[in-house]
Amino acid sequence: MKLLRLKKAKQISAVLQKGKRLHSATLTLAYLPAKQAGFAVCVGKKYGKSVQRNRIKRLLREAYRIPAAELCSPLAVLLIPKPAEEYSYAAFARDIRKMLEREDLLQG
Image (cartoon, rainbow, N blue to C red; front, side, top):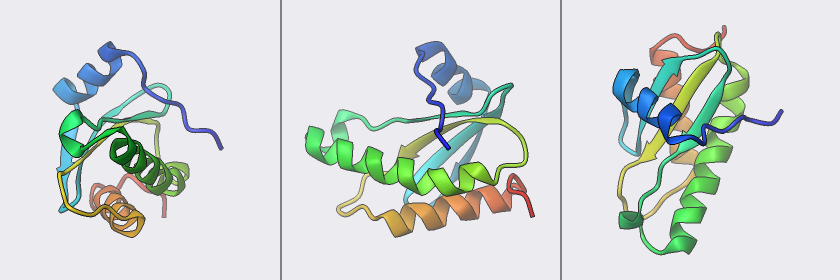
């Protein structure tokens, strides 16, 4: 399943301004109910050079892919990592699942 991306600044700012935020040790997840599911990853220049930023984006996209298929309703989701020395897929996947379960956004 291909995940749709939020690409327009208007969509991303709407999620940031009107959406609800969830926090964990590794990232912040902002979400807003939407007509069509979509997500975006925000990784600024404070996270390192482009190679490091691109790796963080790849890890976050993959960590969100499986829980995204289990969402109860369509959501616009914004993933923002917290600055750290090391980033891992396992930590991102665990935290995303925990946050979505805590808010009862996953089926089952």
